[in-house]
Length: 121
Length: 121
Image (cartoon, rainbow over all chains, first blue to last red; front, side):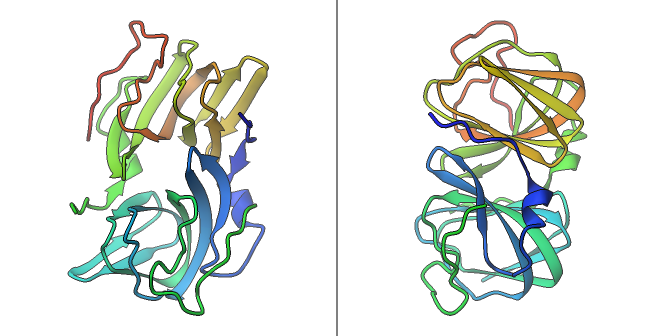
């Protein structure tokens, strides 16, 4: 086993300024805990093989879904079920914690210029 | 798929007052997102089959490990690796988010009176 140290989410978020580029900060079995800054509209996309967990740490986040949308403020959490098309939208900058299995691509099956490389902090 | 609604962690934590009794608030694939209030000393225990994720939302938490301890404040996260004996200690009340696979028992292999039933909110 490898012991990972204590990490502070806000400190990790202070290390970068770009948007839509998740950083892995901890590993939990075959899952990754990530932090990301969001601003503007992401692309509509789907993760066919996994649910995706969002916890808003700062700011506000709207997640548009085919049949409506949900609005999240700090302390709010939501799980996008696998196979459900969704588009995150942040009118002002939001800081978010994500949890998903290792190797998930941020744009899912949609791809495109917002597809981010795997990065760890 | 079943869409779970938006949940607020603090609101869920306001619904109970007992300590060491995790409540499941969201499901992510075969994992559960839980909130729990901690106060005092838990039992030394081990989860042989899984890592365990802790995020402190409020208060402070010490996690004693065989070879030392880590101290967490609000916004701090830590993963106890599988197979590593540990004991959470909260000198003042702490509110914590946990993530672990469905069915994990809070006292691991140790059992005893602090073993909590599965509860969802």
